[in-house]
Length: 553
Image 1 (cartoon, rainbow, N blue to C red):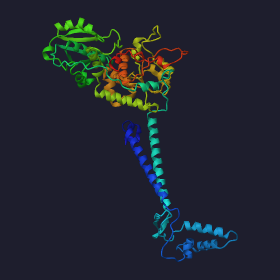
Image 2 (cartoon, rainbow, N blue to C red; image 1 turned 90 degrees about the horizontal axis):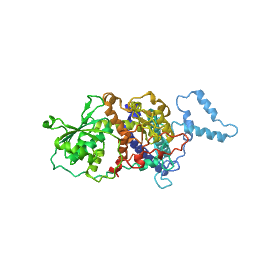
Image 3 (cartoon, helix red, strand yellow; image 1 turned 45 degrees about the horizontal axis):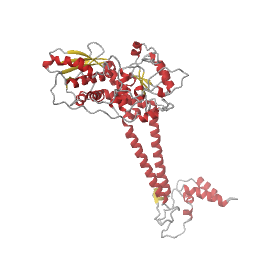
Image 4 (cartoon, rainbow, N blue to C red; image 1 turned 120 degrees about the horizontal axis):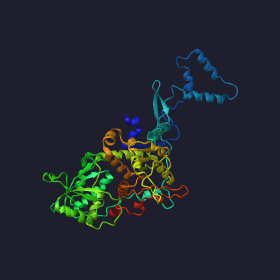
């Protein structure tokens, strides 16, 4: 019943099946019409001839069924007289008028003569004769070609109805889902167009690293604990550093917890990530336990601050001496700078460990993946007529207010306001029909200028299923919301980071690894300056200097 009332509800889950059914039906109908046409070619072109044993000449009544009609009971005397006068000869054109008169009455006769028996037709095949009961049971002749015409008519109407039905429901889906015919005309440049970039970036890269040599035979020398703080963009770097440190020290890694942005907020690793996938991916590399042994829990760990992308020299000089005296460490990651540039292909054990930890260990839990996939599917439906392509823009009003986006000397800014993003997208070449996803959770009035130019601009609140809002937007916390943003921005057709930082860097790494390299970095461009999309492609991609290019090839 919901499919009849709201076709768009069925489109998402049943569109391929419906398309297959429609295609099959059309093929069957076409086959039926072809068979009927072949049958029609073998039918006699002349009406069947009577070859019965009786060779008597037809009586006047049989010659003119109209005369027999006059003898039918129930006709008044006045009617009979009027018809008789009509049969009287008239001056001029008697034969022509009499012929027309007889032809008309032969068409309305209620008791026609018996249908003659069939004979072989001109083609040598037996002719076909059909009869139906009329009135009191007397047979009525039916031209076989009329039967064929009837079959053809029914088949054609069935095909037409099927096509009308398809067009009707497709139009309903389009109107309900607010789709419109658009051209994917953004990112055009002298050197390379968006479609060319899309074609090149459609191939997923393969890992270049070799899995580190297993160390299962070695005894654990201690334990490394840590907590995940911030959003998934921070978690990726924190996990990578912890795995690298544990690998070098030969320590056992304790499954981390997740700390919220507010004091006292804490959740389990399993609330956000697939713990089994994480543990399994590190088998033979680092031993992972869910909890500390009871004898170790009673001890106080030694807290060590670890910079992002910790180097081997830092471990040797600053962490290993402490671990030798205190075999239970708690790592506290910090980010002195956003350093995600490549350092060459992985040629050491720790390089391969870092690649595995960053790109092969963390995976969102199933519930988060399902919700983000639903939101992505809705965005694609809204962009169905433009190839189901949409733009994801990392733009959060609260971050913009804190950063105070001031221009640097090179024309770059650490962040861009909604009006500036609107102008940038227009100058690059996106038209007003483009579908845009913003990482902003709730709508803010400062976003209105962007929506006025690009009406199909949405936030999480617009796209998330209603039954999931309480879980993800109200009580889920900022970490869960950023997890949705991370997934959608990693899978969008075009990614525009309005805010510089770790989110941009780690989303870029995820996109590069999966072959989605359409990343446009905003910049203030004078109106008179020529626009080329290649000028705005992220240097992570254009120069291939992201560390993802060290891990994938």
